[in-house]
Image (cartoon, rainbow, N blue to C red; front, side, top):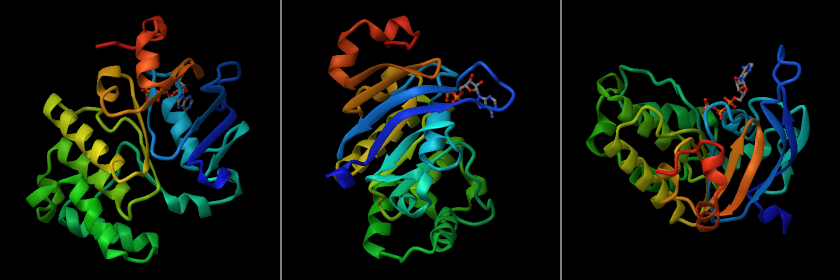
Length: 238
Ligand code: ATP
């Protein structure tokens, strides 16, 4: 049963070196069920990126545990093969096409090429003709969509997206939202962070609201947006 739970976080804490009293993340616990689209919401500095980087196994927690499909992230990288991740500033080779970049990336992961999965991921990402153009010709929005496509390759059971709409304009934000919705429609689980409720409330089924490293509220979207919890932490309701 626990092996069916995409993500379970318990008592998670993290302080960065040099910051002795301030917790980036403090005693954070929540759980994400299969098929949910979870929005991790909070103002700048709330601890979203730190939380996501711990989920991805990129930084170590000081305390607490993260279980992905029942297995602790601490135990090693094996469970991370079921995770696709987007973080800001993914590097691409500018003179190669988007497709060639994705192909290189996929081969570097050493995972078997399940052609149907690769094709489906590219359809969901909806890059169109741009896929066959050099990345140096891409707009910021296109680069970000390519990075999202990269995270989706192989259709991971858990997709973790750290502020995928950062720096995008409203049409690009809408596009990003529909990519997330299409991915979720495959029945897989998505976690997406944002500091704007308006960006996540339509595409998410559940929300976890953080402020100053701590959990402020968690539950189904309608439950959270119906309460007064969001205004108090400065998350913009519109
Ligand atoms: P943002 O939306 O601005 O990315 P966030 O919610 O993702 O914010 P984090 O980036 O996780 O928040 O930051 C949480 C806290 O940890 C902040 O106070 C931040 O200044 C601090 N912090 C983040 N990275 C480091 C680091 N490498 N060294 C020291 N402190 C850090």
